[in-house]
Image (cartoon, rainbow, N blue to C red; front, side):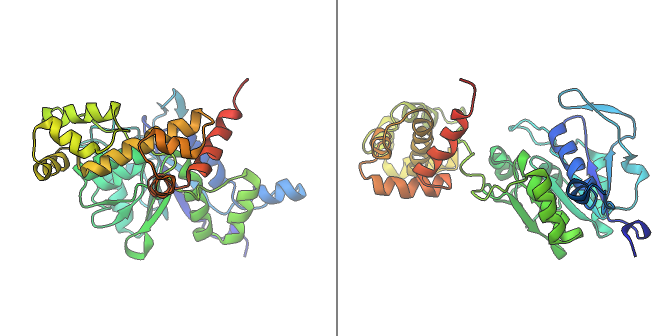
Length: 343
């Protein structure tokens, strides 16, 4: 029996005005051509599509998404009562404000589809919508690394894996979350494998030149500490260490600056920042090391000394733990990007 004689798996891409067109139309382009484009590109004869891909939104009326790009939904959420997969495309959200009270119609529909057995997936900040729906309670989830504090503060029942590119969880593996924006590619290949077969995923990879993010999100993540306003003493220490990260005995010097005993300072620092003081210093130093690796040609040993580590071997171990790869690998990765730019 051919694909045209059977009911194709329906994949619904949920979009809104805050959605990135690259995610929405990237997913649509790849998923809607599975089964058809590979034979066309290799033999000249198109094959049969294997997935039924639809764009869904709160309303079926056309709207403009991020970048003023036109979106013409196939269905409004109230018009569609059946889906095999629901993908919540990324929905831009400020990093300091959760989407409370927003997307109520979409969330109700997502929960209804999940209750009926659909796989529910998300890309990037789409995981915030799943968290709002309560679908991530007690589960591990991926999402953009910049929203780790939002998950910690507003969705403590979700175990955010900030280094994960793809996270599969829930009953019957029906919750699938993808990391930052470009990880829609891993999500697409995962779903093609699951809904069709591995061969179709491999063919799709070859046609679209898709590649994985095997190194995870850590090499791309940036530590962006917020200087505390509520605790002015700790906030002052944060400002000071940002300029003096390479000093010796940094925690003791911050405690002295704060006029606090070491244990009291450590407890207060953690309460204000969610970091142990030395972990905070390490994170600041690694970020500075990244910038040196990206923009200079000094040796790794010199970078180590410049950011406050006398032992380059210990620095390499720490950098790999915090950054997801060795300093040398990080330099190759990011200087290659800089070198490929205009001259």
